Amino acid sequence: MKSKIVSIKDYLWEHKIILIFVIGFMARLFALGNLAGNHSVYQDEAFPGYEAWSLINYGHDSHGYTMPVYFETWGSGMSAMQIYLMVPCVALFGLSSFSIRIPQAVLGCLTLVAFYFFMKRIRNEKTALIGAAIFAIIPWHIMMSRWALDCYFLPGFLLFSQLFLLKAEDDNKWFMVSMLFYGLSLYCYAAAWVMMPFIVGIQSLYMLFSRKIKFDKYIIIGYGILVIVALPLLLFVLVNWGFINEIVTPFISIPKLALFRTDEMDLSLKSMLQHLYDTFVMMVTQDDGRLTNATPQFGLYYKFSLIFIIIGLGISLKSIIKKENTRDIIMWVQMIAGFALGSTIVAYFSRINIIHIPMIFFLVIGLSEVINYFGEKAKYILFVVYAASFMMFSVYYVAYHDDLVAESNYDGIGQALKALKETEHGTVHILSWQIMYPYVLYYDQYPTDLFIETVDYDPDTTRRYLFPRTFEGYDYMATIEDEPVSGDVYMCVSKDEEMLKYMQDNNMQITNYNYVYVGIAQ
View 1 (cartoon, rainbow, N blue to C red):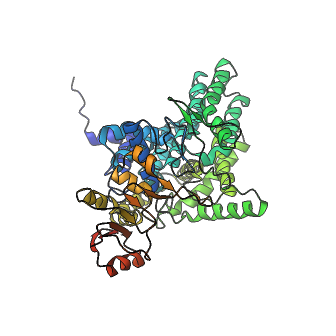
View 2: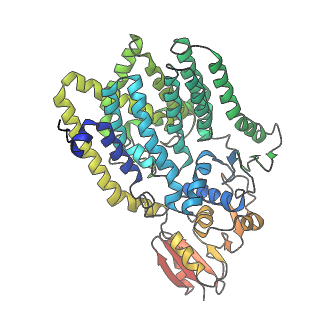
View 3: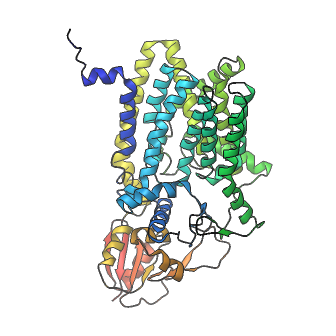
């Protein structure tokens, strides 16, 4: 009996989901350290990377806290999840754009897989394949998977929570895992804390009251796990509201921040309506003007997808009303929470990131309905349209967006500081505010203990973040009114024409590093 020989092409076609995952993984992992930004990093990537490096080499963060539940960083804080996930990557590969982006990229790949199984459980295999194919090539998720920003960890952890919540229909033990991930989600992004009781409460109680899961000891244990995991952050809030003193031990720290951001939320009716309107317009246009979140040309989910999202919303609402598929309530709850969050703050896509997976969910439902209604021809037309859009987005991302990000990140800071390490010089004076101190700490791999010992923060309490005026070897206070000090170094960004002129007028030896100028006073 002859064995059937199956080519790789036939195998991949038969197992389409494997091909989808390969494409999705490549979109998130290819040239990870390089794209976007030509190996440069954003300031909100530099600081967590430096904190991870500090934990590895000094056992504490840049403020001296051991294993903080929330990092003080700028003074107003940064969520802990991504920093702790960076630690093994930085330990293995050193401090670089590649190592600090690994956790988010891997999480992005796992989220793609989770979305497939989520769609399969909440709908069927056919819809799940469509969902995975769309999710794999969505600009928003590709871009967020390639940035090391703390807020971007939240959508993936929430999706894991919801997938395990649905799996509890088969075995209540999964409810405990779901509550664990809901709890861990709190360590991903603080801005969403106010919405988490709404999300967790309604999603889990829906499953209980609809009798999709039964109430037993695993439910009680699950909620207990959620409370235990959330407890350190509850203590953190009490510390920073002034109810209790900060907690510092050799094993865990609950710090008192220099600046606790309690003023970001505005609950006046007028402001909430304005913010809600702005959020709605932003979602319709799919552009918030930030290079980290979306491109104006392609938007979040490809701009033409809006019509399918609207169709999906209608179909989903109809299925809930008719009680055909009430599990959609899980995504409705999260979408509503996203808009509610957007109504309380000045929103941009990364701040209201809990809204995006529900939007992609409704997009998939809409596409599935169109394909079911119009038949196979519609499927092939949509395939061509989305495939072409993905290819155009990929070309734009590599050919143009990379350079825009490099300019925005002031690519050249790292090269300049590396070159300075190889020369003898005096104090480095930072003339442009754009060269923020996390860049210096990150690129210079500045000794953490020396920074803590020598940093002099500006005492101005009206600032929204801590501003170091000086730390050993660096000065942020120089102005064009000062006489240059012979042998000292002066740095500015290329677009800071006034500071560049100051360097030229004082006959400094000037070197250009991409978007940065370095002058050495004679």
